[in-house]
Length: 258
Image 1 (tube, rainbow, N blue to C red):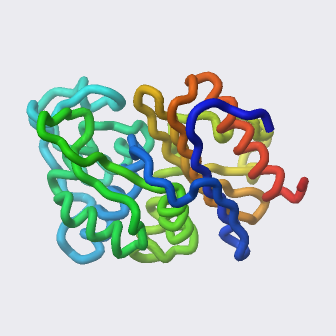
Image 2 (image 1 turned 135 degrees about the horizontal axis):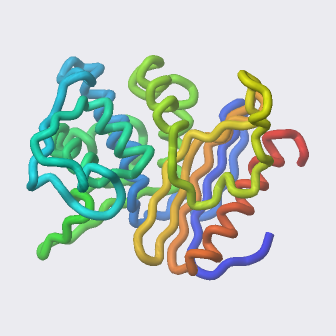
């Protein structure tokens, strides 16, 4: 693998076996949109406790709308969306408006409590997305090891519940954004209707200026790999190329090529 500029933190775990790799795995980094994965877990946790129903609808208020990723910023205030749909938009389109609506619904204290319960001891949530507060002291931070711990629990059906874990994986598999982790993987055979794909990816990206993250579960031939790659201070094209190389290496390991 070629070297890349900037700061990198990587964690890889073979969910099927007790095998893992870490490079600065416990280093706290600005979370960007990766924080949306534990927010999703917190929503399902509150639903499991009976504090809400995923079918309940929330109205979109004009004050909710923020920029960045997502389609809700272009929707008409007053429309109502099911909480499950807001979670889906938060993950597959990284919708910041949907994210803030869910943060307001659940509360940061509850989200942090769920993160702690799930073993994300070095990760923190302090603020909503796309809103710069003049007196902000702390930022949303995560570590690759914490993210992988969460992803592994989801993959094993141990995050909140088996049913919640299955729903979270289903949502993450519909991801519409990529920072490169699957760019170098073999093309899927789409010529046969109903064919089992060679691989599937349930992931989440995170981007702000100077930062490119990607994490997720890579399913290959009956095996599952949890991967979290966090980068800072690397040019976007170079970061994407490095993330793609990491994805290729993980795929080669999972498929038995290495």
